[in-house]
Length: 454
Image (cartoon, rainbow, N blue to C red; front, side, top):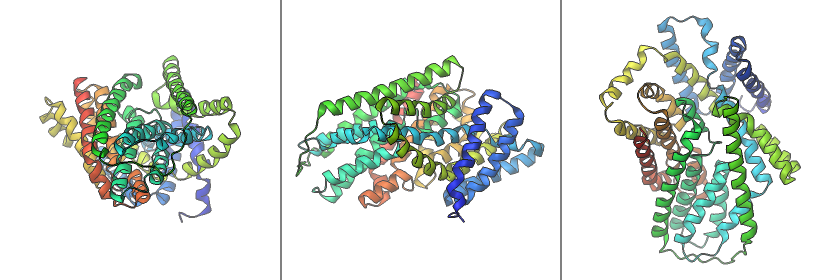
């Protein structure tokens, strides 16, 4: 049934729901919100058919627990549709992300920056930070595509190296650089979710997230320089690089990112809009005008339209997760169910750093069992709600996003690790084991910075 032709046109239904949600951000109509809730329930049912087994299980658990709690509290069934709408804004943001990816590809920034990976160096220790920073810069715009692009280039460049060394280098340099970009990128769904859960302000978060990314990058680059220095790097054909052209592309990309962030902050402040909604409504017009400025409008449409349709048609996993999570969170909100998680937290209330470390470890452990970090956030919703009563929202948001993003390097069943496994031919658990120290240090740095901000 998943292969039925109707699933090729899901983007029409999804888009209709998302447009109504955007409209209701301005109208704030209870009746329209109720109608969107009915459509969300239909979306959940339709998406469930095409979702993977893991996300089906998560959806069933969230819906089952939410239903039991809802019935136990004796609420009116007429309230149910409105309980499914609170996470639609996150799905709307997710739907819009491919347009920014497309404009970067249409401008050929990915090709220009990857020329840096062809530069002449004498050993892998010198190549490591260059590979990491290239993946990081591309990751801020291209998300998952950044890792695959960098891996393809490195596979070609390192084909003369031993398989063990080559695989280790690729799975550390690219995955770690990729996650360092996601930590602060306004286009990352995990960051948007952390902000959504805590109500923290992106402007307040950004300096600290950049600090954490910088510290982690410097430590990892130092490790890479030392660990891989013993391996000589000889290229059969050294590619001549036009550093001026690459530098211009890099400056162009950074200025565009800075401009986008500035617009998000200014428009959000001027019209009192929340971060997620502001990013969502800005992505397409910004990408469109950027393509016009570069005189790449035709390429932008050629790449963007089919990419957007494909990505929107295949967002069933996140639809099931976010919609069922909305019902679960709204069902348990304000009920005695939270008492089950309140006692252990209360016992360590005077030791917030231990609580932060506990959250980081939970993220990593859940990822090892194949649970997506968004699913872990859903499981820990009750804990986060309680912590917000006593802790700084900025600190909690930092812990959530560093914990969630760090797992992308170690989640053996996660998409980026699976793709790396296919690209390199190595066991995904080998990738997990290689990156586990990094994930622990990454989350640990986030926890310490969050603690110092209390």
